[in-house]
Image (cartoon, rainbow, N blue to C red):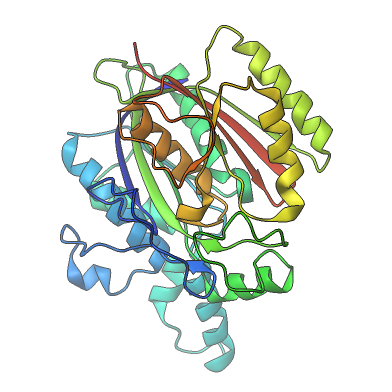
Length: 346
């Protein structure tokens, strides 16, 4: 589909400008907040006006923007966009009786605010779009990128997945039963055997094109599915694996998130694979959010590049020095399923 050349990640772990994934930052009040850098590359007067989604998204993108002379478009996936600014703006409409409203909150409130500000920051006048498809937002952005590269073989694109924890969204998700009622530590993330999970957030940016020279990794295939039936998910994965029957998958990166209601989906995925394939989990590092699969893809790139797999990620099997073919499976709220096959470039 496409090759990944540069990656950048702001997450609840120390992942910006380094890959310190051995030591874990633990949840606070069942939330894993992004560890934000100093943002030295961003003007301070602009930084003050940015919502968190725009802040972490642009912050993650700036190192990549500085490394390339230019790219041909910006494709972003987000499940909620700048939800916090949306709520503040709606409250101001009521509070000021539709009078003198703060324009900053309005500008930041739309889902495409990040992509548009990235365009202004990089002076990029190319293709600019934001995919908002809940738990498949990043996958849709990645598929869109692959389609663009099929039509424009020499182009290069900035692909990203970004979401924040907003107070409004967190309260709604709590009422809907998607977050734990009891406090969970990183060590007890997968052993609680209760419903719900821990909220997370983060921003991942990738520079991608069709050139395999000096590429970090290759996204071979992406497939998505909507279903609540675990057997249908398993059948879909079986068909996906049959398409790549000659590919020796050596690691499953599982989106298991500690929610007992979703265990059947991840168990079915593991049962389809050979017994010697290792299984690793990542949600205790980033928490649960719609575009967490972007964090998994960033992790896959690092593991393929030779970064050691931490013991806290490993669920089953033995760790290797490097991995050649990694399968990522993520399930969002038991409805949206995605499969990504990431391989080492030859």
